[in-house]
Length: 397
Image (cartoon, rainbow, N blue to C red):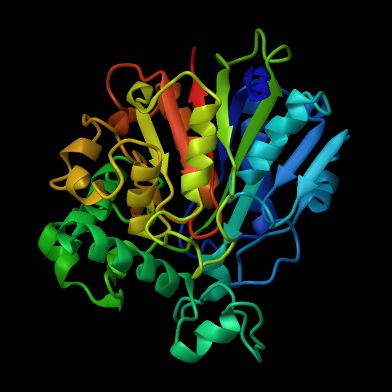
């Protein structure tokens, strides 16, 4: 089977300032990131003929979860588009990039500018963090599964994902000391990322003694709301020749959902929909997990990164806790260098786009002090948890 996404390459990346309560207009952050990506690719605005974003304009949820959609950016940059896409019902936050790859492979556009902007930190102000779904303030009428979960106090993804982690602990003997290594490794890597939010060292004692959020998750198992925008340009390989950068070929994508689309009624709560996305991705390439040099895996909560490690085949099902124990296997010099920028646990919650941006940075050898040694050639970027998941396998070859 010829994977049509191999006709697509990432040709440029850009990112705005990232920080806590930047108090900047979110569209200004978006424009900064998008112009940086266009320049990074050696293109001009006239070359951009496609736009794609997640979740688009008008999505309800926590304040600052979205910052506008395609039409606002098209007008701001005066783009002439042959194709565009934006909406929340996608295969995780990277679904907008996967959809853009499909559009480019189909010939709908040559250069698609993909973007994701958050400004949760400024929008939520100085009070307690708002939860997605019930954090908008005012009256709230629950529908769907939340009408059954809210009476039990399960009002946020922190509770839903912690339930999945507890199930993994129960079935496979995973421990908090093992799970801690996801957060500790992220903090070590964030120390070398000038845009990361938290860069001070974190010890196992620090992790174990901080306040609990939803057992087994403590404060350091939860990602950090920030303001920031990330942009990625995907181009047809024929249009990517002789560009400013060596193109990063999209080797394979994964976006499948075979289980029930439910946070609490999925058939296997220890793995979630990322199981299906991972299986699809590996079915579309001859590369195997042992070929991957860098893994940038979603850590909205620490357990999700562990679940991705298992689903992608870096260790056996149920062995994730033992695989990350001690942290050596996921360090910058380990078997699977993980979340080299600090992830969302220390770097800041930029959603799946932050992980794809870092995967490209590593493959282009521009990670600085956090650069994985040995000139990495293959990277995987994955995002999503619960009933959503999407992943891309990139190759510099």
